[in-house]
Length: 338
Ligand code: P6P
Image (cartoon, rainbow, N blue to C red):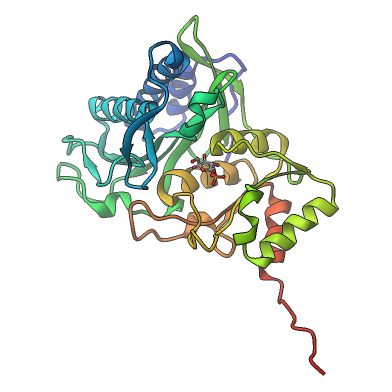
């Protein structure tokens, strides 16, 4: 088990990052600076979100993204802000974003890292004031430093992530991330413009009575998924589904629970994206003692083939993910015909 990094609640993010870097003798500071760059962009996006209703930046941007989804104005703003922060920081040679069709070359060939990001997940909830989030994964590049970024630098299996995290723009704004030494949550204090450690060494309960699923799609789910959902009802579990992945995930991380986005007839690979949604949350949940699979494979072991590929997602408390896998793999014994 990775040694977990202790620090007193109230430690400022900058100090926490600096202190932890000192514990890695070979750390040269680039990853620390990259985390700071992400936090800065998060502060800026947080400000835009909080005043969106006042400066007419809610609603649709009128263009569809590569996913065929209606881009919201704040999707575009968040995408620009994070790409600009990552490019100007100089630590990143390439970026893939939910809002960009192609791999972005930052023009910084000396950058040691690449980032996969969903700049603003759940953005359809913006206009109704529901929590939304940013999800990011960080990998070390594979190609030689000083050369242009290549697609193989970003198409890496999830277990190669060096860091992953999310920002949750909710009743309070939080930054939650891991670098492989536990999961740490920071709460933003707008009056000081700083994130402070509020949730050191986050761990997810091994079981709970919360399940998160859009059961409006249940007519399209595999029979085994519906059998599991019936099991949850028989156990009198509570259905909690906000329709914003980061918000649903964060609640389940704190209280325990399982989030399910199965394959459907319409979306045989599911809806969520492997590279900038599933991998990051899978790294976090495993570091917090939970599990994440696509129903048969560990998310972090899935070898990606496309930048925007999708996968089914079952993520949360270990015992609950084990249980849904039991249902998914239960031999459907055909009753004897004789
Ligand atoms: P549905 C938002 O578009 C998102 O990617 C996640 O944030 C959310 O959990 C899911 O899709 C909601 O999808 O099909 O239930 O509306």
